Length: 200
Image (tube, rainbow, N blue to C red; front, side, top):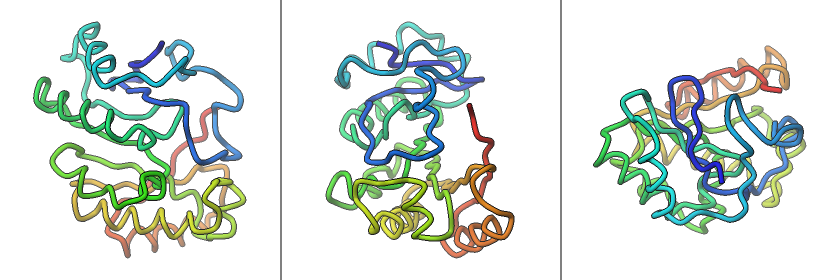
């Protein structure tokens, strides 16, 4: 199974196939890999011990950051994420980022943001659009229309516990006016707004 894979100068951690969303622009609809990775669809979810063992295969001095982002939503495997992040911090002293849809609180049935404190340096959250109805059309979350507000609340929680919180949209999916509205949302939360390129 492809648990760890390189993208540019970072090492990515692929924990799960599970995701509560079926985003219209999700790259996994069209491919089974990212960059130079192998097949990212997992046969099963790895344990924390299995994930940690994979780091021995890599020269960690080559990587700037360890990023929890695979073909599923990393907070679907929260316990493994936290155990692995603690290991990476203690052993390699690397910066840690989570790329997330921001629905971790709904997935886990509690506010998970305090658990990120001291382990995670950056949380990158998919904002996608400033409009709740349009968000639901784009993201198609199994949690329904509560998802947009839950994602915003997750971002507000992260600002309290994580040094850097980034909220992103994809450059081909919304208008310039909507991007300006997203900037306003991020300013109110205290997050950085980033427009990212769509990857095919």
